[in-house]
Structures are given as C-alpha cells and as structure tokens.
Image (cartoon, rainbow, N blue to C red; front, side):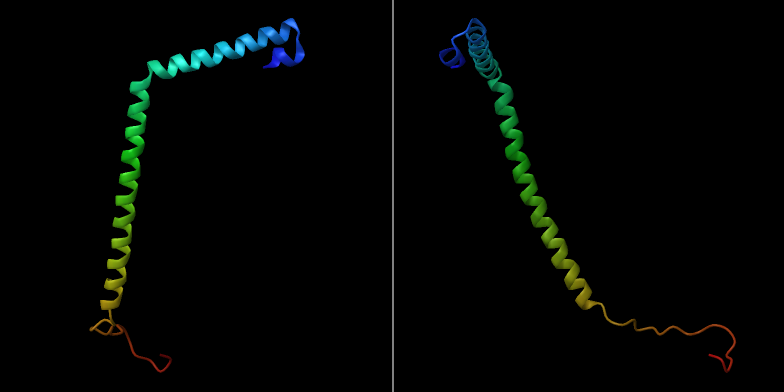
Length: 88
C-alpha cells in the first residue's frame, strides 16, 4: 500500500481511506444483490431480443429480394396523352 512505500502520516491516512472505500463498495454490492441480479436478467433478455430482431431483419431482407425477383415490367404500357406533333 501507499503507507508502506512513503511512510508518512498522510500516506497512512490515504491508505486507510482507500481500504474503507473498498469495504464500503463491497457492502453496497452485497446489499444490492437483488438489483445486480435484475440488471443481469435485463442484459440476458436484451441479448435474446437482439438475436431475434437480427433473424427477423434477415428474413425481411430475404423476402424483399424474392419480391424484387417476381417484379417484372409492367403489363400495361403508358400511353401518351396530348397532341401528337412532329417534335415528339
């Protein structure tokens, strides 16, 4: 730790504060196990949902390509409306 290297009162104080901070973090984590498990569950659901969405997008793309294959030229030709002149 810091106090073993520097050997000053300030280094000792900082080392104690660091240890207290880690102890407090451990207490917070232990008391919030329920929240941590809920967050993990949400992350798992998100991963599953994301994979389902990817499959759906791939299917939509595949179907879109098939629709494009079936599309051909229009069976109806467009007639021009108006006067016929030599310029056209």
